[in-house]
Picture 1 (cartoon, helix red, strand yellow):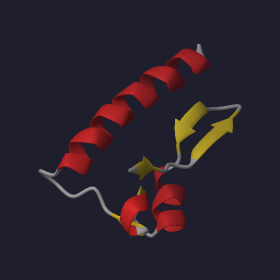
Picture 2 (tube, helix red, strand yellow):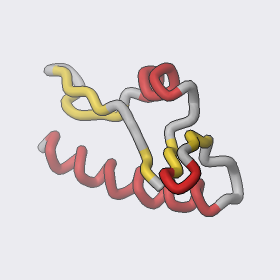
Picture 3 (cartoon, one colour):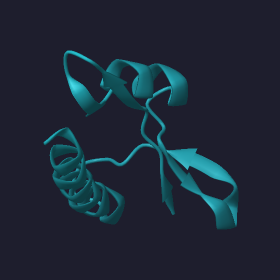
Picture 4 (cartoon, rainbow, N blue to C red):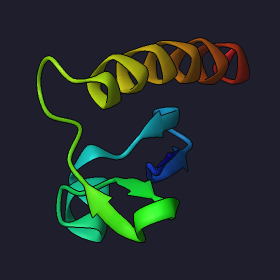
Length: 68
Protein backbone atom coordinates (compact mmCIF):
# COMPACT_ATOMS: atom_id res chain seq x y z
CA UNK A 1 0.00 0.00 0.00
CA UNK A 2 1.05 3.59 -0.55
CA UNK A 3 0.17 6.33 1.93
CA UNK A 4 -0.09 9.86 0.54
CA UNK A 5 0.02 13.17 2.43
CA UNK A 6 0.43 16.81 1.42
CA UNK A 7 3.50 18.28 3.15
CA UNK A 8 3.87 22.04 3.36
CA UNK A 9 6.58 24.44 4.45
CA UNK A 10 6.03 28.00 5.57
CA UNK A 11 8.27 30.51 7.31
CA UNK A 12 5.91 30.70 10.28
CA UNK A 13 5.26 26.97 10.81
CA UNK A 14 8.14 25.17 9.13
CA UNK A 15 7.32 21.69 7.75
CA UNK A 16 3.93 20.15 8.56
CA UNK A 17 1.25 17.85 7.20
CA UNK A 18 -1.44 19.96 5.56
CA UNK A 19 -4.49 17.92 6.56
CA UNK A 20 -7.14 20.07 4.82
CA UNK A 21 -5.20 19.84 1.54
CA UNK A 22 -4.60 16.11 2.02
CA UNK A 23 -8.32 15.52 2.57
CA UNK A 24 -9.27 17.69 -0.41
CA UNK A 25 -6.64 16.29 -2.77
CA UNK A 26 -7.34 12.63 -2.03
CA UNK A 27 -11.03 13.02 -1.15
CA UNK A 28 -10.18 11.41 2.23
CA UNK A 29 -8.90 8.32 0.36
CA UNK A 30 -5.16 8.77 0.91
CA UNK A 31 -4.14 5.11 0.81
CA UNK A 32 -3.51 3.55 -2.59
CA UNK A 33 -3.63 -0.24 -2.99
CA UNK A 34 -1.69 -0.99 -6.19
CA UNK A 35 -2.62 -4.66 -6.59
CA UNK A 36 -6.31 -3.75 -6.90
CA UNK A 37 -5.71 -0.23 -8.30
CA UNK A 38 -7.96 1.36 -5.66
CA UNK A 39 -7.80 4.31 -3.28
CA UNK A 40 -9.09 3.61 0.25
CA UNK A 41 -9.59 5.29 3.62
CA UNK A 42 -7.61 3.86 6.55
CA UNK A 43 -10.63 3.01 8.72
CA UNK A 44 -10.56 2.42 12.46
CA UNK A 45 -9.35 -0.96 13.75
CA UNK A 46 -7.85 -1.99 10.41
CA UNK A 47 -4.36 -2.94 9.31
CA UNK A 48 -4.17 0.18 7.13
CA UNK A 49 -5.03 2.42 10.12
CA UNK A 50 -2.36 0.78 12.30
CA UNK A 51 0.20 1.29 9.54
CA UNK A 52 -0.93 4.89 9.00
CA UNK A 53 -0.53 5.63 12.73
CA UNK A 54 2.99 4.20 12.64
CA UNK A 55 3.89 6.15 9.49
CA UNK A 56 2.47 9.40 10.84
CA UNK A 57 4.47 9.02 14.03
CA UNK A 58 7.69 8.50 12.03
CA UNK A 59 6.82 11.33 9.66
CA UNK A 60 6.21 13.69 12.59
CA UNK A 61 9.64 12.79 14.04
CA UNK A 62 11.22 13.59 10.67
CA UNK A 63 9.37 16.90 10.32
CA UNK A 64 10.28 17.88 13.89
CA UNK A 65 13.96 17.22 13.08
CA UNK A 66 13.75 19.29 9.88
CA UNK A 67 12.14 22.14 11.84
CA UNK A 68 15.01 22.36 14.35
